[in-house]
Image (cartoon, rainbow, N blue to C red; front, side):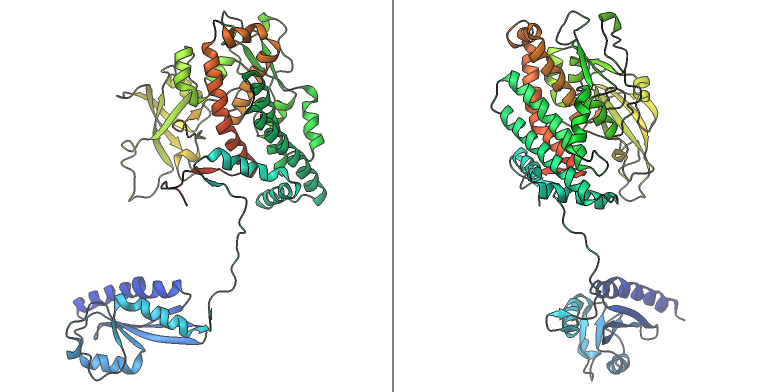
Length: 505
């Protein structure tokens, strides 16, 4: 066989598969390549849908012998040219079958789909497919996102929608709960959401002291709702109430240094609400201390279960600028970025690797490679790197065999106020933004209610710089925490975009 003809025929078969068969299959036609003919340089394709079938031929070139055209005139319903018309009348004469260019094949897809229809209904297609009902949305598009976020949260103040959310989450997790349990959980969920709405609404109109307390109890209400919404969470409001019988699960102690605000001690306990919440989230709570310290000598700030108020503030990335101005406490978050150069470009044209190099920035310049290595992250090959940008920089390899992208293995905090960051955990392994900020609110609420001698100096005395920090924290919390809690309620990442942006619907 002429090797040139065979090569052209091979190209023609591929074009038939890519440009005819592929598109007919999109419309649920059964397609079969029933012949390829090197002498005439054409292929014949049969397409069928239900009881309707057609044959069409794809020719390599318009300049094909007239005998081939006449043979195809008897054999097929349509002749398609892979190229363009070139003196067609000199070759395709004496036939009745229409000859078209490949670029016009769509018109016959439409025409033959009409032939394979019963009125307005297409015949021969697939049966009704499985489908996924639309669920409570996790996509928010608004000029003022916080309004839409609260609108979503407020939906679950009604017992009916609360039941639907719990039922939806049970379906997702494959857990079967009795209707009685779902109703009891929904009752508690609706009540907790109403409480949270009331507290946050009140906070928006209150002075600073009252605002702190209202936001703390609003956060506790949302945490209660988060647990009740989960199929694996408490089964009733009474069960949530029982969590508080042993208190908040946190404690405070006066500073052991000269600064009563920065050094205000905050610790975690092995009973109470916070302990139950962290246990629900899957954190290691087995070694939380059973009692709070009685005297200053009992305080051990090197323990992972004890920190200070300023230490807590240092875990809030949105406070970076203010924190650096009012305190020398180093920040406790890191930024991670894909290192395209170390990974050999962005690999657009190569198979995605499950090992990715990243560069890490510690803006506080206080961490060492040993500190980075201690993090509970799948990092290897950690080393310092020189950078022209502010901060202390590291390079590391992220192993992410279970995730397509590296950031699936590194839980990042996303915020509209700052770049995405990794928050270094408190109390061992607690890195969730909503949990850390709730602990801060707890400490502030203790100060404003029970330590007026300290709070007075913050409100109008020598520590008034911290008042600005506190006020900024509350503003950020009011915007971000509801979004984080909504994601926990839905058990889904919440996407917030501005209208007209590249991610808008």
